[in-house]
Length: 219
Image 1: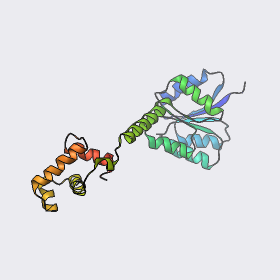
Image 2: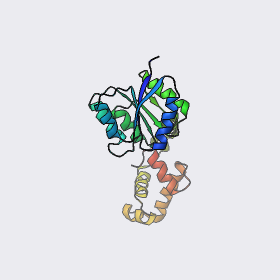
Image 3: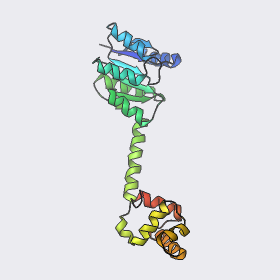
Image 4: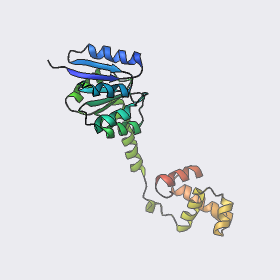
């Protein structure tokens, strides 16, 4: 059986040895090199070393993971890159895939999932670990729920004067300051503010401002 040849780039020796131990225990994998920096990977590739998959961290000295991915694909080196990192922020995920990575895993990933990912990528697939995938799903669900909760401003039947008061409340003006700006009595302004709270079913002025921003009444 032809084995999948794997390179490791990880600057923490204990972590690197742990990954190597896991991969060496698999019949279909062969670790052909393990180093602690992106520069060492580039040096190895320059010697003509052949590998199918590179598993790399992002935070390394002497050419970090992102720069490494970028250089490998700029040089058209045919190796599939799997990112294995502690960084779970969307910006790093997006940059990694944009630069050419085939998969992205966080370091608390289970061994079974890592092995599945490697096999999947070896067959030409792409992969995002379950933890990050579910975070994105949750974000989409929350966005959908927020959208569904939005109210058509027309349904609120706000008067032009109430909208003026709302805009000034959003700017942080007090009732007295608004009354002077709009040439109204303070009591009239208070009435408009209370009407806005009632119509939007808000608990208080801060809740009113939050509601207005969420529903496009304030920018």
